[in-house]
Image (cartoon, rainbow, N blue to C red):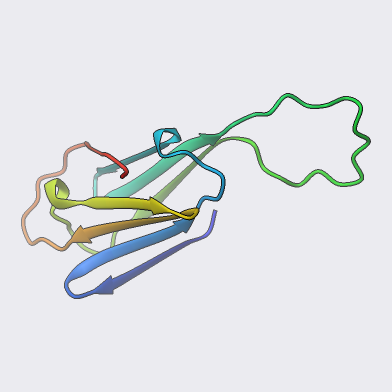
Amino acid sequence: LAVDVYEKENKVIVEMNLPGMKTEDIDLSVEDNHLRISGSHSEEKEDRQKHYYSKEIRRGSFERIIPLPSLVEKNKIEAEYQNGRLTITMPKSENTKDQKIPIKVK
């Protein structure tokens, strides 16, 4: 899955397209200066009556681990999922101890 990582106004921003997902199916955490994004696309029951010529839509689980360019304030991370786009905003920090922090997606 493609991801954009950039800095804006002293914040690290991560954007990822996840069309068709539900917020409860997306799991985010920061650990060891890495952002972990994982989840699963719903597996629809396959209709055996269909004769596929091509079947490219991904289903099942995924995981993406992104190294962060700098330390972030882990307790101030915000995530928003809207219209198939996940945006994670992480204020930069000088002193943050490594620990696993779950992040709730709005």
